[in-house]
View 1 (cartoon, rainbow, N blue to C red):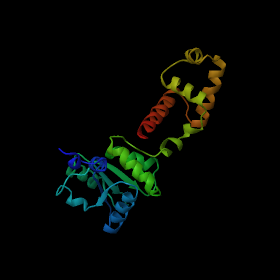
View 2 (view 1 turned 90 degrees about the horizontal axis):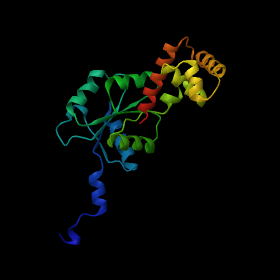
View 3 (view 1 turned 180 degrees about the vertical axis):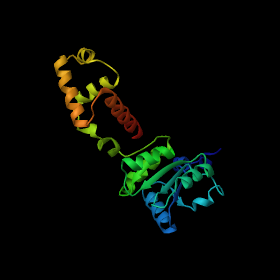
View 4 (view 1 turned 120 degrees about the vertical axis):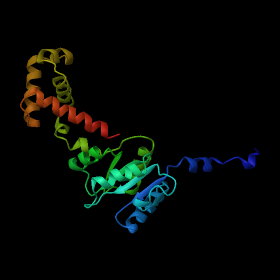
Length: 211
């Protein structure tokens, strides 16, 4: 192949772009979001969700989740485009919407107030195989109020370590451990080590979802 016939780096980059489809309750909204993504270097097209499968399968589906969206519709999209990863845009990314997204096993969640640059960043990360959820999922958690040392203590409590073992592991006194444990329990509104373990497990799960 001559040098003139070889694909340019720009051509190669375009071929590497993920195929992104935008679905919304109205064509106008879907087209606006696709245009917004395009302004931030993500090539996206608006599609009729129920027409998926008629053309090349998308790599990422960006789905606007309005109040009428049903679980069955999302699961149906997953069946129609089994290789596609799904990013949900919700009115407000809070704990309940994250739990809903987890149940549906989607790959990303974006707050409706998110700007175009951040949305594009999320879409590209999801296209590369990451799961991306808002940092506020963790930062809004009550454990965000704990100090780094208190988090260390909570992790060891959750692991089943005794006060004496925690003191040894962290090179602090047993009385200091007891003080931290009392403070942690009070601030988190929990009453025993079993509840502490549940809180820590939940926090780790949410941190993992941040991608």
